Length: 382
Image (cartoon, rainbow, N blue to C red; front, side):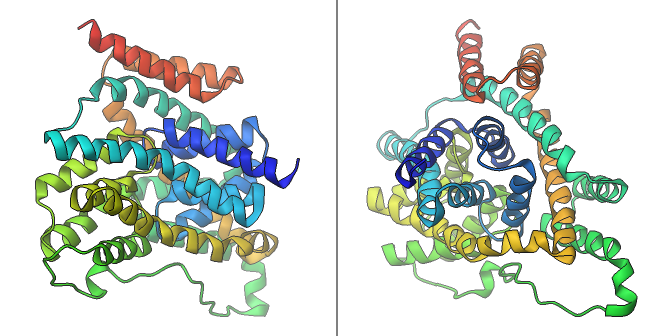
């Protein structure tokens, strides 16, 4: 396949996913795995897991970083840009349309029917991905124990990053314990991202809106935000409500709602904020600002991922990070299941979708569209 054909394939895959991928990062990862590992065979499950582990260790939106990693895997540095941009673009345009409706009519469209039918399908897609990836991630009693422990600690409220680091280091040390007595342990400085909080960066007391400040504010958030996209709420509340005074709490809440009811990354809440503050230019600047750090981090980290796998020390570190990453996906899935499987119909949608995914090589896109149709009919017949 020519380079041009590979780029077109990357654009096609991630434009489609950016248009239909509801349900948050865990669901996005499940759909990506179905598309690029199971159906198109761009890479193996182990390679997919390694990229997922790397994405979890750097700041920014994990599912968007995975599209950037996967685009680069398929089509080099141009694929890196095309993959991420293609995933972001549909969500950005949809959110801009919501922003236009909000600014002109002061309200948001009702989308409960869509989420009602699609979320159970997403639960099934994630469950199928966890099952298949788990076969690679769980390599023995050690990784199984680390994964289960991480899941329990996550359920008790322990943050994602400490779990990822602790799990990776623990597996690395135990798997290489025979080397410790004669080689010793050499401290290694592994750049895991910026640890400072937003408040420790340059504080801005300005109250007058400016495009440059809008870009800088979202660039800071994209560069330091770890973990779930829902942490974005706290960051934006501090920056835009408390520090700058550009948004009300209600506007911030509406921005988060839009990010949840539209496909693609939750970070496109930034697009909505940018639109209500500065129209189309503001939406584009905000989107560019919050996602730019992800492209930079992936470009820096990507060359080292295959090399880490070849090292006995860092390969073991990746094994630990991978199994903890999968445990975090399980934890998110449980939470999503509680809010999505709310009656016999949604349970039936999830179970049927899972059976189809496990036994038939059907494109998950059709399941998403089917769930949306069922949701529409269920609300129309009430």
